[in-house]
Length: 303
Image (cartoon, rainbow, N blue to C red; front, side, top):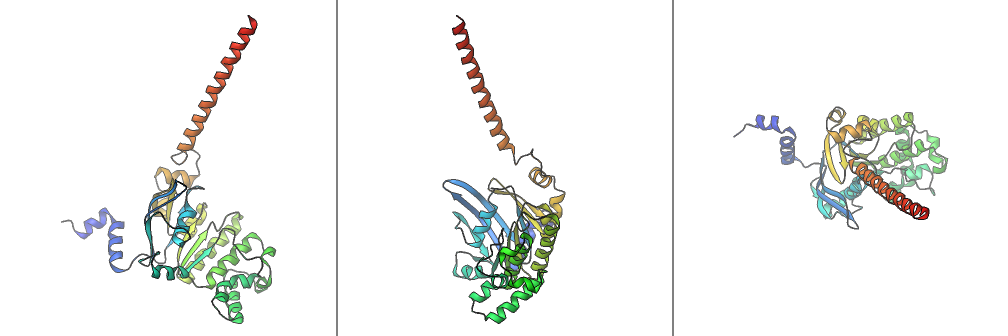
């Protein structure tokens, strides 16, 4: 029988997972997840494990199902098949339902309430939990300071904020409830490079200060390299690659290389190219048919 060291050399991740599972479960486990809408398969057999305190980036082209995957993990969508576990408890179980309250979400546009000022937005969950107004405001001010926003920002309305400030307020709101799990949905979308780097720094600091497990949906590779420990590439409903960000940067995998380098040609666009070629071929056939008909008409008229 092969020694443990031999097994470890051949399959370090498998052995690590086996040893880890024997001790404590992963923070988030996705097992054999399928999800379809109106007969169209969006997610196919997704298997993903995220360790406690780990920061995972889910990357892929637009429309590949990244948001659907996260909504399933959040319990906002019910999978057609498979299971999702948090701390070893199925999300469908009573214990799993309780664990959902430990999740904080930073939505793509910030999703701030226009009817509330900034500090009320930040303290929203605290106020809903019955915490006193004075205590909730104090916590909100601390969180605003953590995302480098001055105290005077607290009394502003969301409409008075820039895009970058709205993102920071959204992060502060997530921090206020001290979550165990953080979700960031395209946190740097639409921001300039300097503000993008600032938000990436805040994501790192926020995750570390809370000791939270983080999942980030992003197209921005600079965010992946700065905020994530590992990344998973989603294509055509499947996770086609998983690995560390360092491995991703130098990967020879065709899918990874095309996405990281932002190339138009590659396995992730082959189907669309074939459709374009088929369309072009069809158009050429129609054009030839029309030309032939015109020739016949012209010949008949000449006679």
